[in-house]
Every structure is written in structure tokens, then in C-alpha cells.
Image (tube, helix red, strand yellow):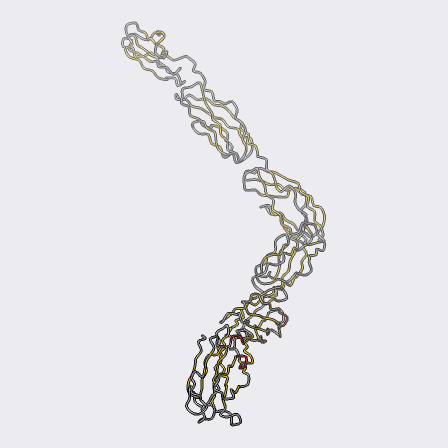
Amino acid sequence: MDGKPDLAVANFLSDDVSVLLGGGGSFTGPFTFDVGSRPNSIAVGDFNADGRPDLATANANSNDATVLINGCAAPPITLSPSTLPGGTAGTPYSQTLSASGGTAPYTFAVTAGTLPPGLTLSTGGVLSGTPSAAGTFNFTGRAADADNRTGSRAYTLTVSCPTVIVNPNTLPKGAVGVAYNQTLTASGGAASYTFAVTTGTLPTGLTLNPNGTLSGTPSATGDFNFTVQATDANNCKGSRAYTVTIISCPAITVNPSALPNGGVGQPYPNTTLSASGGAAPYTFAVTSGALPAGLTLSISGVLSGTPTAGGTFNFTVTATDANSCKGSRSYTLVINRPPTITGTTLSRQQGAAGTTSTIATVSDAEDAAGSLTVTVTSLPAGITVTGITNTNGTITANVAASCNAALGNNTVGLKVTDGGGLTATASLTVNVTASSPPTITLKPSLSAFPNNHKYTTITLSQMVQSATDDCDGDLLGSVVIERVTSDEADNAPGNSDGNTVNDIVIAPDCKSVQLRAERDDNKNGRVYVVTLRVRDSSGNTVRAQYKVTVPLSQNGNPAVQDATAFTVTSSCP
């Protein structure tokens, strides 16, 4: 019974049996036991079912059998540990049972009593699982060894409940006539939990749902004391005592009484709403109507954003205090739309005096068109816009183009501003044309007399009274003689001609001309035509013709101009 092999031998001639006890590589003995006459065979077995091996011999001479009963006591099988540690419902549990005193391996089983719900004992001795109920559980564990010998031990396993905590620590106040809603929770046990009031009384009008929702509308004031118990999935419980105070709501006022207007596309001036009369802190919300698109109201009462659409918006803001008491105010908020402006196209001549014209038209959805302000935001060089006037939305101004204004279209920037500071822009187009040509004013014509065949010098100062231009001013110094014609040929035949040539000599600087004082006796007098030319800085060129006459006689009729006979052209460009 020590788990080591022994040796038994039947001794035929000595009529006995020898037993050698195994010692793990050696034997002790022999131990001799008498049997019948001439034993010739031997058998080992538990013949009396006591769990111990016995011997039997067949005796050939005496013709019988001898049974030797094993009287040695086997050691008991013992289970360990002697006691089991306690567990907690909802918490994993694991302990290993072991056995000694028998022949390994051992198998384990529960033979009496009941394990805690959720625990099992494996055949290898592992007691494990998650207890699902609290209590004291008694059972008997048995170990069977390889020789089917058994040993047992009675155990008591105590499963305790975890600490179940009900939350929150306190509940807020409520108010008569104001909806109340709070959610109770629990922790520490096994979900899910159910909740119930075990002592005291809830405020009138409130109920506690098994899921932990405390809700309703209080209908009476006072201090209400009650205890709430939470029961987890394993029937473990935890409680908390509460006091809920129900008050009467005061009058809560939302401020300010009115909100400033805003404008489309302009950041709204941040406005913070406030409340008074209740218990701080307050929360704010829009409870009817709608804010302008682009604006938001924070829970703390800040109204901010950038409006994206104009119009008049009506909405109500409700403030809720720390006791859920409420107060509201209705607001009307105007979001101004930007004005509109449309520019025109004008034509102006360089250097010409400015004239008053319509430069734009304006309108606005909220403000009268005549109240809008138009200003110039950009001016090209040489363009002036002055005296801007708004007549019911028609914008007029004096517009001029100086001599240095660029020819063609010039763009003038315009901006219209309404009473709320909203703006819009447009362009005025000024089409600038070239300045007017210069003007030459001549003095009275001269007469070269007497007819002495000599040169008479005629200067510009004798011929030209003035030469002016809108842009260049006095151009008298720019006048030149371009050419001179005569209606009689050079060295014309006839009396009083003198047979001279070069009757016309233009000075190199083109500022004077020598004209010969002679004429053909056979005609009606001689006419010299001096062509004068002036050109301004813009390239405008003007010509004028000045006549110098040589009469036939001093007291006769004035010279009459005939067809041109010859022409002398100056060298001035």
C-alpha cells in the first residue's frame, strides 16, 4: 500500500509463501507465511473488498487453496486546505483542492451540500467561477485516488455582498410647478440595478422609477427626507439617505430689455444676457422663434456670430436658475441688409470745366434712400468728383477731367454707407476725351502802301491778338508762319512791279515775313495770305489766315483777292 511493487513466491517443497517488500530498487524480507501442502501457484487480489491486496495459493498435494488476508492498515486520504476563504458576489473566485495519503492521481467531486451559485469544482480540484449570490454554503468534497480509495472533507464557503454605493451624494432643490428630473446610479455591485424608496416620503408629485429616474412636477413646498436602496443583479443592496427641498419659484427677469441691431456680414456686437431674481447660476436657451442665421446663444447667455441673412427676427429667451425656476423675455432683433449702389458712365473732355451729372443710384431695404451716404474711395489721376449730393437715392456730383487725365475709361471707386454702418461699393466710369483745339484771335488786316517796291516786315505781334488753349493756356509764343501765298506772280509784269523777285521772304524762326509792296498795274490790287499755325501739347493743331493787301492806288478801291499765283512755305515743322 506504499505504491512500490512487492514480490510474492509460492515455495512448493516447504509448503509456504515468501513475500519480499519492494524498496525502490531493493527488497526487504523475505516474510514467510504457511499455506497448504505443495503450493504450486499464487494469486493477488482484494478478496475481502477492504481496498488492500490479499494472497491466495493453490495447494497440489492437499488439494485445497489457502487465502492470506492482508491485515495491514492503509493510510487515510486527506483533503486540503482544511477551510476555504470567503468570496464576494460578482467577483471571480478560484481555489485549488489537493489530496494526500493515497495513490495519485486524485479526482475530486462534491458529494453533499451545494456550491455557491456560479462556482464549479473540476475533477482536478479547482473550485472556480463568479459567485452570483451571497450567503453561507455547506458542501462536502471527496477525493478518490488511483486505487479508488477515497477521502472527504466538509467545507463552509461564505459569499459576501460587495459594497453597493448609491449616487449622487445629494439631490438638487426643486420648485413647485417646475418639472424635476434626476437620475440615480449605483456602483460597486453587479449591473443592472433596481432602485426603490425604503423609508421616508418623496416630494409630492415625484416618483422614483426602478431604473433610478426621479422625476415629476412638485406640487408642494418643504423638506422631504427619504432613503433610496439600490439592488444589484446578485440581490446585493446599498442605500443612501436624501433630503430634497421644494421651493416656490421667484420671478426671474431676463436682461437686457432690448437687443442692438446687427448687419449682414458684420460681426454682431457680442451681447451677454443676464438674469436676476432667482438662484445663480443661470442657463439660457431660445425656447421659441429662431435666431438670425449665423448667430448663436451660448448656455451662459452670450449672443454672438456673424449674421448671413437680413430681416426682422422674433424669438424668446428663457433663463433657468439653479433651482430649475424659469423666466423669459421676448426679443425682436433687426438684421440690416447692406445698401445697393449702381454707378453710371460719363464723358468728360480734358481741361474742360466740370459739370454736374448723375454718378450713381442707391437704395436700402431698411433706411430711406435719401439718407444714405456716398463717398469716393478711389480717384484716377486728373479726375475730380466734388459736391456729392443725394436726392432720394439719385447721387449727383461735379465731375471734371484735368489736362493730365488719361484718355479713355477711368474708374472712380464709390461706396455707400447706411445708418447701421453697412456698406456697398460700385464704380463710376469717366470716359475722358482729348482737350479742345487751341483758339487763334487775329488783329485787323494790314495794307502795305506806298507801292515803293520795298519790303514791308510783318511780325506775329502785328497779326495775332492771342492764342489760347484749355490745357496749355497762352500759346502766343507757339504760333508760327506756316506758309504765305500771293494772288500775283513773283516779278509780275506791268507798271509799278519794278521787275523784282522774292516778293515773299519768311524769317527762319517763322515769326515774321517780308512782303514786297508792289502790285500789277493791270489788276485790282495784290493780296498776300499768311497762314498761321499753333499746336497744343495734346497735338491739336489750328490754323488761321491773315491777309496783307497792296491796293492798286492809295485812294482807289481795296485790293481784291484773286486765285493764288504762288506760295512760299516756311521751314518750321
